[in-house]
Length: 391
Image 1 (cartoon, rainbow, N blue to C red):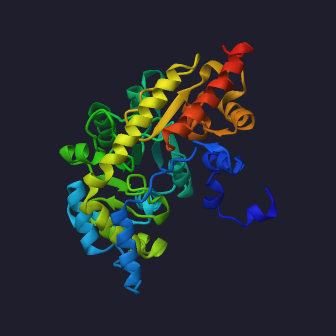
Image 2 (cartoon, helix red, strand yellow; image 1 turned 120 degrees about the vertical axis):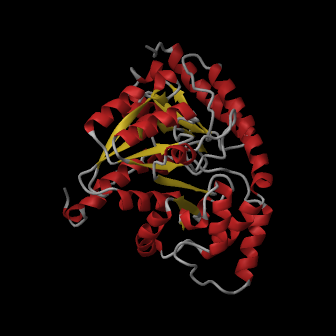
């Protein structure tokens, strides 16, 4: 360890760099990048108008720590809870940090999905707790593995993080799977933290919310969401956290000392978005459904590759195990793909051990760009197949 690193706290050193950002940094300015989970569509006109209107008021005060009361009312109406159960956050990432810092003590065990978004284990480690992976079965469409949950209950845990729909797999988990998770949570006398930022992106069935299923069992927990993905305002940092009213009040000082409040300008934008959410989001969902269908169709045409149909979010988790087992794993395949084809996909191992043998593709570019990307992907694996580099 260098002298500079020794000056950092254990919490800071517990945070591991992510392969998502590492591969983005490796790319050239003109690389074909399907790595980062960032939509490419324009911010809807009513939202841009709301931002301009707020800016032209020439006033930029703090809001209440928990957010503008009118926005908390709008979020509550959108989600089916009371305004008193809503905290407005600086995106999902801050909401996750508040939830984990607020519910988890040092030395406790927290279940995180494997494969799953790397922020979950990193934030758990940052509070001195132990992230314990629970398995999403790659050979069953990344369904929740009941045996993995049973083992976790036997070992004990204080909280479980669940992401639905899933990043990186794109799976929209069913009510039965969520009920299994909640049964395990209840048996362990634990709490749940549900990241539902991709909730609007569900293609084949109605969205199933952990919060809604938990309410039937009266199991308390924290739901996190926002508008970054659905309204294409990733950089405007607007999210929300819902929890029992007493928890919201208890978490308020933590949130206050982290950020004071979410940006007031974006809070005004959020009210405009929620006033017309279905109208504004429906064209986005149809566009991404077309992209999903195109992407899954192209994968089926490449020998040795496969992916689930992607019931939610905007990712395909591509099964490249036929190649990765002799080609140095998903990290080496993604590196070669970038060097040979100037195409950025994210190695599955960046999402936990359960992601090894997969590559994550974000279909967040227009269909003509996706066509070029899949042409490059096909050429890359055709070359490897011709060289006999499959298991």
